[in-house]
Length: 252
Image 1 (cartoon, rainbow, N blue to C red):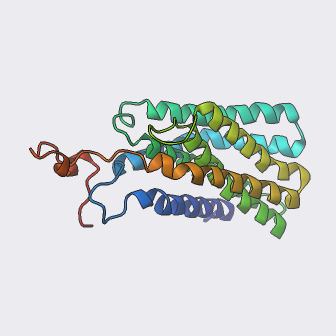
Image 2 (cartoon, helix red, strand yellow):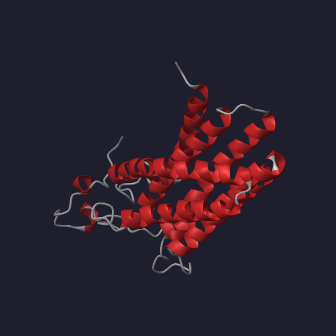
Image 3 (tube, helix red, strand yellow):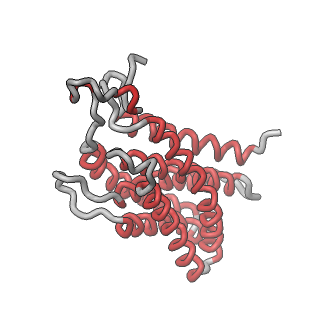
C-alpha cells in the first residue's frame, strides 16, 4: 500500500532538490567543459550525508512546528537554536573532513549537503500536513510555499556560512551569519502555524524570496571562483590525469 501523505512529501522533496541540483549545481558541470569544478562522486556522497543529517533535523522541525502551533515561545526559541546549530555543525564538520576537504571544491559539497537536509525537512513538513485530519487549499498552498522556502533557507544559509573567496568583493561569511539567516528563515516558516494560512503564506514567501536573493548574490562570487582541478593541459609532463582525479569528464 502507498501512504499518500508520505508519497506526496517524497515527490515534493525530490522535485525541488532535483531541480536545484540540476539547474544550479549542474550549471558548473556542463558536459561541454573539459573539467568540472567539483568531484561528482563526492557531491553525491555529500547529498547522501545531508539526507542522513536531515533525519534527526526533521524531528526537531516537527517539534518546532508543534511549538509554533501551540504558542510555546520558550520551546520555539530552543528548538530554533538546536535546528540551526546542528545544520551549521554538520557543514562545518563536512568541510573539515579528509574526504571532502582535500580539494578546493568544498562550497559545492556544502550545498549538496544542505540540499539533502532540505529534502528530508521538506518530506517531513509536507507529510505532516497531508497526514493531518484537515486538508484544504489554503493549507496546501502554505505547506508547498514552506517547502520552497525550506530549500531556499538551507542553501542560502549554507553559502553564507562559507568564508569569502580570495579576490572576491564579498565580505565576511561564517557559521554565525549563516545560522542567523537560517534561524530567521525558519522563524518565518513557523508563523503560519500560529497566525493562520494566509499570513503564513506571506511569511514563508518572504523567507523564500529573501533567501534566494542572498543566495543569488553570493552564488557566482563563491562558486565561480572555485579553482578547477589540474589536468593534462596544466601539466605538460602528463603526470596528472584529469580522468583519474575524479573531476575529468568524458564525451557523455
